[in-house]
Image (cartoon, rainbow, N blue to C red; front, side):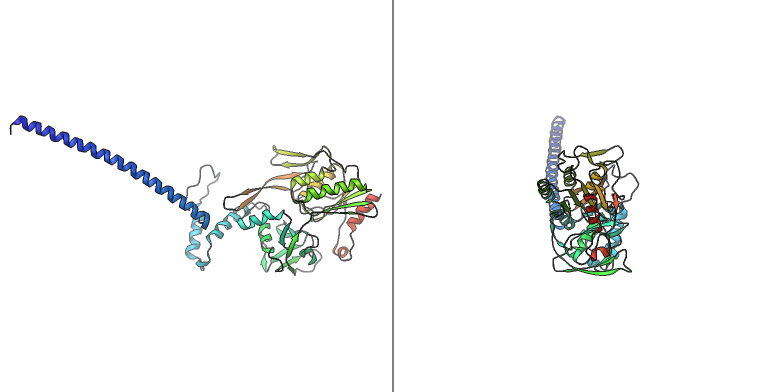
Length: 424
């Protein structure tokens, strides 16, 4: 083979090698692209499976995920949460009793409880469902509204003719234990969950009351609680009595009917009995107050010093010319305090009884994707004159008590005083 043929053969070999090199590179690129598509598809399938698993089994996701930016204003090491989580799984004596969903929800309850606001609470799906059903007016339990007063679980109001009232519970009674379990540090929603139960079952409360020598056990048989929120009575002395027990789903309809009845019967005066009324819907409270208040502010919602919302009366004021007395007591709270405060400040009614409960904060309810929810205090209520309802309550114009002795002897000095004022 001469030198020229050798050179030609070498060049031919080099061209073939270059061609194989380019072919290999193209195959590598195609393989990488296809592999990437397969991996992405598998990742999406895995993600969807994880979501379904989370939905049906409630497993914790993103166990060691990074904290989103701008979530914290202080240095907080979230690894401590998982350190404790792992420690419980590793060392707790009864590992078989660990329930991760309960642990997780318990941590969220602790998060809201750290604010020391009894009305800002996390509710797991079961409690959230019960809360949603509360204002419909029908449930099973003992028939008593609860609150936190001076960090103690307290009866705000026993509902008329319901098991709690029949067992002798009064507004202001302090509950120190439920079925032998201390109520120290309990939230209202937890207490409600423990006290409620199927009809004909029993719950035992340890009750303390001013005037009692010591706390006592009260055993109550649960029943079906049906709440008709408005009741009326035209007395023989021509005084019309309207009792509103709650500001619930049926209140507006029933109260409008009562207003029509009042106008038709033209009484000498009206007694609006809001005793033991724990509250309810803001809109309903404004509707009720608007039957006396014509074009003034009913209540102000205060978020900050700079941000406030004023709620004006609806302009009807069909009852403004009827002399009116409002009865309140320690069990009057929230929406009932809004009505009493509005009519007091606008001088449309005289308030008789005892200082109200002082629940004048505003909550917003945020429903979460797993059926749980968070109730957060976002503002406070102010009366038309700017007085804060929260903690302070509404002070009556005429202060008079209804004692245990009065109750046992079927006497009602608060009602008697209201009648006396109207007859003058």
